[in-house]
Structures are given as structure tokens and as C-alpha cells.
Image (cartoon, rainbow over all chains, first blue to last red; front, side):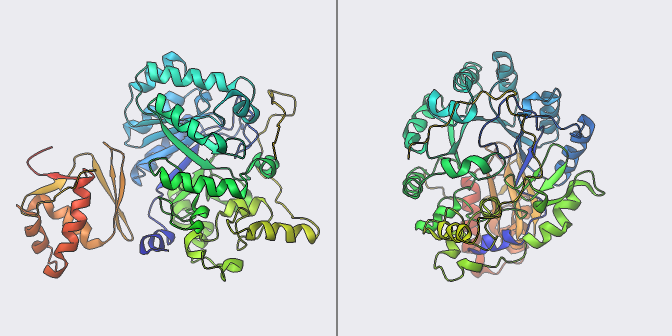
Length: 378
Length: 94
């Protein structure tokens, strides 16, 4: 830990990286969806409630928000809300599956200031992408990319969740981003949401993790949202803060206004409060019991005797929680294999007790699910 | 990246599109133009940055906030990186 990460660990007046999910509605049913999105929740925040949050964020000097979902562009007031954020000085970065990036919408977005777009593409070819995101989604996102380029949007981000299947394509991704003048953003696949069921088969192998680490070191311009800090235990730290920011520099507001410690822990256990509570978001951020406890020094637990604890901090809380590991256990993808040992130990003792989802908006099976059966090459 | 030389004998100020947010460690600076985020990691540095436009040189600002001259080089270093990121501009330019 550096002096700066020590200071950040103790918490900030306002978050640096605030993710705000605008709806649980989604026309896709990606197998790794961290929020188990699909159906809109009838309790979702109204336009007026959303604007009141923007007012408070502006007051707290939250400089930008990361908008996600679900598919945020499915909200009928999407453009109204984006415009409202920008007007208040709250920059918008939003993640989209690209389905609503028509030629017309691309031109509308290109005309706006302080708006960044992250397009999700989970395979550099149709076969790899559509296995995760659903049939036809590769062609659709390529169309969205064309629309943004044709509209002169400028630099958008191509966002990839790294899996066993697409890590071998990493150089092709860089090339594709380059062709569009886009930035590449690679993030870690956590076993959250529907990812609980697919993580085991899709998360990178340990050899792939090493390959990814070396690739990221050689490409510091590639964005990662600091999500691979567990790999810093391999040696030289990766660019970024290299700490678990949950409740410290990061948090999530979900579509019904619940505030969670990070985007990957949509579970009652990590729910700090609601923007609908008295004092709104600021009160939850500044004084909720959960966030206060997350800002206390962490106990290295099982990792205490490992010389690399300072580098990885024990890894990702969400990854541990959803694989049934205690929060002071090693990360399930610990680069030294300590996480795999801990999981094997749980299996020997009658199987891991994995938490039951408390927020699932998946569509009923058979509805809107056009998945290609996964072919996992071992 | 080219090496950026910060001239502490000149008058400086925050770029118009930069906002400072007070934090327990000092302040967070955000540049709405290039969308960079940076940390001002001491309260003294925040005081210096805030007082820059009121003085004809950065050094006069160091003096005005009562900064020990021994610490001036490290503050010049910090201001150099802020200027390199376009967070600071010379007061008579934009």
C-alpha cells in the first residue's frame, strides 16, 4: 500500500467512480451479466427522482458517473437524463449493448459534450461474442460502431469482459479498436449476477492470467477500470490505484435507488442504504454503517503470511463472496493458486455455501433468450 | 511525452475547466476539458494552488502561504506535473 492508497482506503467525501444503473430492463440476456438484468423493476426511480440524484451528485462534486443497467438506452427518458447530467456538470460515461445506437442517435450523441460511450463486445468474432451476448449481437454492435464513426462521435470505448474464450483474441481486439479510433477497455469477469453460473467455465486459466498481466504491462494505454489489481501480485504493479475501492472510492446506485458497495456486489449483504432514505445518496455515502466498516483497515486473514499481500490486497471482495469464500480468504483467482486451494478445501468439507441471489431480474427461461450453447475448449 | 518546464517566476492559475473538490487528504482535481483526474495530496498544495492567481509568481504564492523554502522544490515539482496535465495555465493565457 502506498500513502495515497492508505488515504483513499479511509474514504472520500464523494466517490471517484460512481456506477449508476438506470434500469434492469435489457433486450439481451448475457450469460455473464453482473446485475442479472432483463426485466424492468416496477419500483425503478422516476424521472424526477433521477434528476434529484443528479442535483445531489452535482452538489457533492461527483465529476462524472458511469451509467449502466440493464440497457440504459431503454429508458424512455434516457436523453433527457443525459442532457440533465451534462447541464449540471456531471459528465456521463455510459455502457450500452449498442442496440439503440442508430444512425440518428449516434448523431445526437456526437453533438453532446461530456458524454463517453462504452460499447460491449465480448468476442472479436461472431462465434465468440454471440455465445456470451446472444445471437445477432456481434453484427449489431459492429453496426453501432459504424454509426458512431460515421457520425464523427470521436473516441468511444470498446469494452470487453475477459474470458477464457476471448483472451487469445486480445491483439485482434487492439487492432479492431484501432481501426475505429476507439479506446480498448478490458475488465475482469467476476462471478456476479448470472456470472455465478458461468464463471467456473469461462474465467481465465492461470496461464491466461499471466499472459494478460504481461500484455497489460506492455499496453499501459489500455483502460481496465483498475479491475485486475489481483494480478499485481505477479510483480510490477499494473497502472492504476491497485486497491479494492468498494465503499471507499467506488459504489453503485441501482435502478430502484439501492446503494451497494460496488457494481459487482448486488446482494443484500453489501447494500448500504437507499437514495430514497433521508439524506439521500450523500448520507449513505458518508455515514452508512456498511461503508464506514469498509473504510476500516482490512484484515489480511489467510493472506497475512503471503509476501504479496501489499500488492494485491487479497483481491476482489465480490469474487470471494460469490464463490462462497470468506472475505478474508485469498481471491479465487489468486495468481499463486491459493484461491483454488481454498475452494478445493471448501469442496472437501461438503461444498461451498454460495450466497443466494437477492436481486435477479432475469427473464423467465425461454423468453428473449436466444443463447448459443457454450462450447468450452479446455 | 515532452518534458514540461514549469517557470515559478511567472503567474499561474487553474485552468477554467478545472474543478477542485476538497478531500481529507487535500483535494481531487478534475479537468472537464481533457477529463483527467488528479490528486492534490496535501492541504498546503491546495492552499498554494488556490492562491496562485493572486500573486505575480508561483514563488510569491509559496511565500504568501508561509511555505518553508526547503519545501519549495517539491512544490515546484508538483506544480510542474499539474501544468503538464493542463490543470494549471499561465495567468495571462488560456
